[in-house]
Image (cartoon, rainbow, N blue to C red; front, side, top):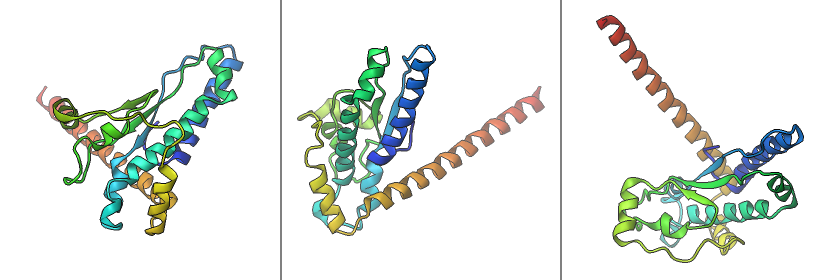
Length: 200
């Protein structure tokens, strides 16, 4: 499940995953289903970089991640999850996507060192991975309770950022971008196929 930008969007995706597992358990089917829920990070900061004070730059994506991680850990600790876990289900992994900083002034390992957490996956871009190997240090793990997420998000609200509206906007823009990329890919494949057919 991809193109998630907020804890609410994540929870909707997680609920769909849970419903499927519960149906499989009820039907006597194998409940072990591999799944990830991909939450995009750096696009948050890119979207607000010119709309917030310098002191708030490159903090929104991490705050959203912390809020989402809190929701994720709460789900893993819930009685609902424990029931399917005891039946043999595997947890859906929370996946951090878009973790290469878009701001050249930001640390090139910003989202890596800030988002280390149990039960998560980080799709690290190659350049970011090399930077991590060269000079990155992992600090404390993400707190299961969300840490200072709400305090930071309150600062963004005070600066005029409507996080819920922005989450919807980012998801809509991301979906349109994915559709455009898919159509481009299909066009290239169709063109290659036609050229090969003509050549043969």
